[in-house]
Length: 205
Image (tube, rainbow, N blue to C red; front, side):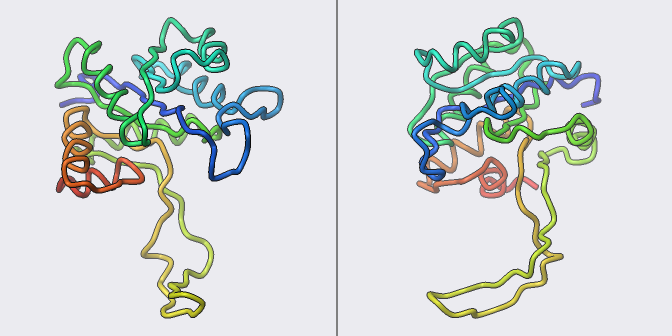
């Protein structure tokens, strides 16, 4: 599959409640420099020429969400959210499969709605990586602090931080790989926290 043959879609799960931040407003709707956080994530994909369509997964009756996606509606589709992130992503992938003309050529990037700082440089690097990493790829950041493993209140081991990375988004793979991986995780009752974990579980590299 050549670069020109690939069709890149994006799924943005935006159904989260923001419970980890202990905010009454979900973090994707918080204002950053006068714009909702989600707007930044949408804008970078909307303007990129390689991105064919964007699927936002969330409450289809949420006025806040509808207002944010309105300026992008010619390139944005809306899918219903699920009970978990994995279910929401699976719903988004189902819509991609339904709407894409040639599924064999579709690669999907899954990006967190509350990560507004994605740059064109990183997005281009991820797209280009699909030539080398045919099972999928993700953006990561190096671990810069000393990494300790703990049990209860005691340190049990210090790890070599060069062997670790922090998983970021987008995380990208062929549509068929992502659907297979998330289905397998669901069948096995594994609660995956990102798409890369599901791909690993399914044996993809």
